[in-house]
Amino acid sequence: MKPAHLALFLLTAILFASASSEAYKSPLNIRECKISDIEFDDGDSFSCAGEQFRILGVDTPETKHEDHGIKKDQPYGKRAANFTKRALKKAKRIILIGEMKDKYGRRLAHAILDGELLSVKLIKAGLGMETINQHGDTHMPEFAVQILEAAAASPEPKFENPSKWRKKNQTKQEKSR
Image (tube, one colour):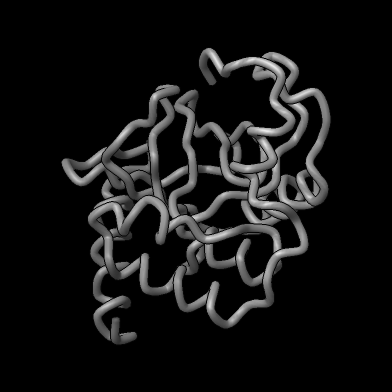
């Protein structure tokens, strides 16, 4: 996608989200999130104003979640969680764009921090694997292109694919998040 088209898309998203100082939901499910409303979970999920979000386009290493059957941290899991926490705390503006929910009730969304996708930041830092090839572009091809370009330009992550790691290390089925 051309930078001018991306800029126009992001400007539109920001205009929708800035219509209110409160958390805002549009028909496109665009929301601005204040850092004071965030509860941190791991590298690719967090809560905003009580609603859980799973970041689209990226999978980060797992962190210990006993209630989900994950009894230990995957290598690089804490690093990814800390990276996301720092990136969110540092951001002046956090925009969440997404329409669907996953089987755990989390909203699947792209997180844009000061104009840059969180998934791209994680991939460039070596703390996330792209999931576009596995799950598709989720009807947002302009974001998928950015994620795939970041993955192609970044070194291979030093950790095992989190999905494969979970299959080997999760001791029980996840009930809900």
